[in-house]
Length: 349
Image (tube, rainbow, N blue to C red; front, side):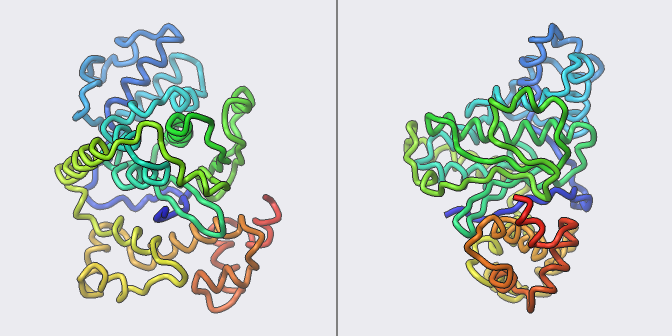
């Protein structure tokens, strides 16, 4: 079963104190490969960055986020191509994601590939994370922003989500039937790719890939291998530990909230599951730059956006399932998230 969901388009400006976000250098290597099509030489793109193209293939190397953003911005300026993020996503292969891609390739089913990708995404970048969620007969793979990507935001969001769509399609051996929601206006260049990409909606309150045929999640993958999967997962876990990311509580709280069916857990319930006191959990979350109430609000938003895609549930039923005392409270919260009422959001679909 998929374990969490919803994407927060509003940027998470509250970065965890002391966190310096990074992006795997291999993605910069793919960018070098891409811009050669426009006649841009490696040295021209890397000038002033104290980077060598051969070094970027080192799987252990990560770039500071500001460097990764500057590289994509320079690549866009040198090529004159605003759609580099789409091209990056379309050229992605499972192997483009390093050991994480190998773990996904070795997974027994598409569901398992999604789970391992969301669980260990931080070894590729800490600037964004992925969450998955199933509700109302609809599944979503959503992207959460943890840093300001500046002018490169649109490009990297396209690169990541289109890249994971491509990876899923390759693993299945056919195009993965999804729709794409994006939290920015429709770019002028998008019409060029309309036939090559999934159907897309823009100006949405969530960046997400939405899957309607949940049976696909159980599809066996062609390259499944239990021994390889175990080796790859163990490697991912060691990398996560070496990066000091495995001790963070906020991702574990998000996972627990998303895994819970029906009513969301209370602070005391989550603290008990983590074998902590409520006071200790609250203190640690605050040190990570987030509160329990904010995590609950994020999860309600994710569930609400997904549940509204299903016509089988009334607004009242959705409000009840999210723990609101009445529809009016849910409507106020939903308007705060999206600027629309739940009914208006559903009618726009």
